[in-house]
Length: 371
Image 1 (cartoon, rainbow, N blue to C red):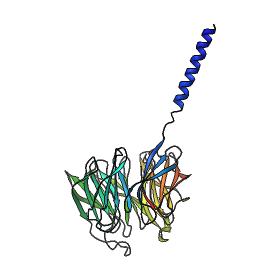
Image 2 (tube, rainbow, N blue to C red):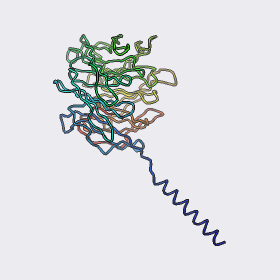
Image 3 (cartoon, rainbow, N blue to C red):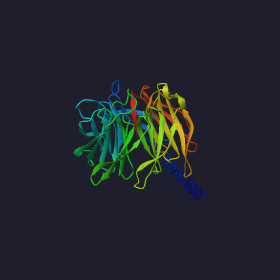
């Protein structure tokens, strides 16, 4: 009898030991957060932090690369290549690539000849699209799987001017994004009140139409719906968002509607900046500088497109040039350019509403956030 009791006792101890060992293996819930900055202050370039997708805390900030004004970043699908534009008006390199092996290393740099490059995105798997604000054009550059730039730079000059004499004296390309297939590319030009459309034909791009905004609107950034149901364009100068549907070619050219971000407040020194859909595509968020808000819209009720203003949040926000939503959709992170911080907002996935999380990361002049 005593032997059986000893045996059972020893087995219980063994089970408890195994269970305790298993419970000690805590799952890592953090992901890398990449931060582009303006370097006119104390910032030195591109940074990386760790973001906890459960708690919403961001910490462990470290410098990845010393780059002059890396104002916009993008990553490839595997997270092994990071590309940055350097926003300046000289002949130095304005495009950089970093490759991740055991650590991040600078892979290549390129002077495309453009002035004040302010946006970069990936088209397909091996092409970069770049918007250049001062030179008023867009560029296309190929790259390989090591992040090296290849082939020649294709450049498309924009032509015209807008109704706002102070800001629209010439073309000012401000953003460029592609659909999921990489067939159609959309370039918002603040200076000419248009979104220029380019279509990929074989290994090149050709002009394929344009979206014309209201005079003085100033198209700035673009968001493509996760299921590609609609395309949304945020207009910096008149603080509106335009919505477009697909035509028979599959390009977003059919105008649907326009909504206002702030109603009658648009003449009070405010300017719209960034725009993103929620991961499920039900909600849309836009940032406003001056008023310092993230504005919330519900865009779909089921499958029905029905754009409704749901509210806004301003606590802890200071000149929100850029923002992003974390991979799990639980948090929205705002780059406070003038607040020298990244503030974390909790996002309700069911209602789309935002509230302060209590977390923030101090960093000088952040202007781009990427997961």
